[in-house]
Amino acid sequence: MAVGFSIRKFVIVPVLICAFTGCSVNVRRQASGSVAEPPVFVAMPPAEFPMALAQAIANHALNMPFRNMLPVRASEQMFPSAFQLENVGLTAYARLPDAERKNDLYLFSPLDNYWPSDYYVNDVRIPFTCGFIVQVLPFNGGSQIQVYEYQPMVVAGKRWLFGHSGPGRYLDIRQVDPTVEDRNALLREIRRVLR
Image 1: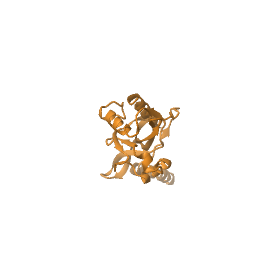
Image 2 (image 1 turned 45 degrees about the vertical axis):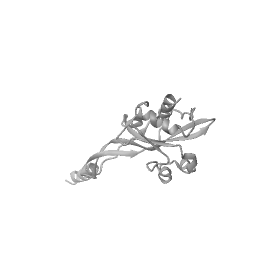
Image 3 (image 1 turned 120 degrees about the vertical axis):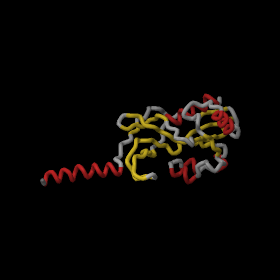
Image 4 (image 1 turned 90 degrees about the horizontal axis):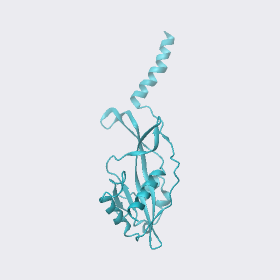
């Protein structure tokens, strides 16, 4: 009897705790081996670039997942503040003077726009999403374009929580480190569309 009680105590209690609090799964990043691509050069002045990229997005010229993103200029309220940028590790960018960021864009999806990336749970690729800061700098009469990921997140499955609608299974959304491949993909799209 004492043996059975101790087994129940050490097996059933952790199972119940896991069921009601949600057991955490390990999210693993399997780097694609990509090396960060150099900035893209576009033969248009920095002041013209934001409108050109916004027009390309409106015309669905960019491939998924960038096609459904909304462009927000640095002067608009939806653009992340310096405080928000510093909180996600973009400190050097956040500390640039406003004059150097005036032509920059924030690309984000207002919908649940996820795509496959470098993150896995149990060797299964999991959905990834992020916004992008597109930095536009003057360079040789044109624009030099650099891209930074903003708030990269994955959906690691579902877990049991006491959430906004009461107890139940909710998406396990986690912040993760930026990837290289997703930045490179956006740079390639910009190069392809705005040569």
